[in-house]
Image (cartoon, rainbow, N blue to C red):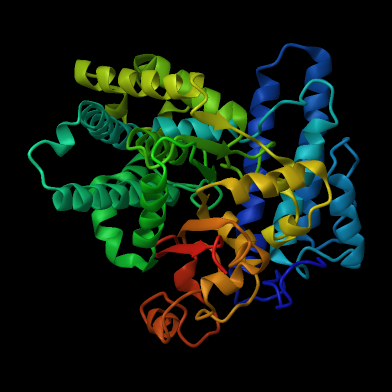
Length: 486
């Protein structure tokens, strides 16, 4: 709290905010889904002791839901041995042990998922259980059409980059323009991949997911990028390459969602390495199940396993097929299978060579803003700070990362993005690119009058005090700050 922005935070007590809507409507649905998932796992279990413990977990999740819906005070977290427990509980005490509907949204939401995790981490038989894993994998399976489209395009692109065919018979100016456009398209695919966020889209059908992820949807959504700093980010990568093309140049990606979004993050990572815009990509997942769909290391393994045998993954019936378009279970064609095999081999090769690596850190599941990283006292926090400072570009994916970058406070929407980053801004040594589809109230860097203009549109919030336009993921911002400059 000491190092967070000195601006009022969004609170669950504000009934005009998405914080209140989340606490009242979204969180009970998510908790109910967790109860259903564990109940289902318990029903399929034959181990008496594991069943008994699983039922106790279900009861405790139900108690958590009751406390939330009846506006009880937040309880201190049970000590599961995690280094962050003391941080959470000290902050809870400093906040005077608030109730669910009278607390900072960012703290309460992080507390919710951390408390849910303790129910598993303190158990004997369920310690490594991810209550959201089934849902994450099911949604990726429903993304088949978009996966196949992008796999084919990616294979063509990487083969052209490897052979040099993309530069044949082209002038230097044409090559530069093509490279800039290609970077823009890859980054925007990565941006709109965030449109599938399981903590928000709790009841989508297969067709809905297809609409969110198809190429035409991306083209239709370009006009909804309110700020687009991709040219500046591209020029920074290009300048670093020109200065020393054979040097080690790293891009870090602070991941958001698993499934399809992780898939497109890997597309971007593979492209950046293959085009020599960087030599290495470090992926930063969460170290525990988080915000329903956030990436954990097992999610990375699950995605690669799915791609290793795509026919089995995409066509074998599952218990969830009642919710899936039966057409999605049609056999994969030979070309589709070959495209996916190319992806698997390329990404696995980059991983084996150390060019593509996973680096989890407990800091990402802490209760506060990323402003705190500059003042971190733990060795892991200090090491993370130096890693990000040494990176050529740090890409922060998604809404939660944006909320934590800006502190999730009530900045005026015209506040410069660099100012909202505090100690991660100019002079920090960290070159930041935020790729964010808006799903929360906080937004910065907008032109004067843009917030009011969108509020005046249908469903935008009007004069009611709510910034409803920023809740749905329809609008996006792509914002860059070169913290290596003062």
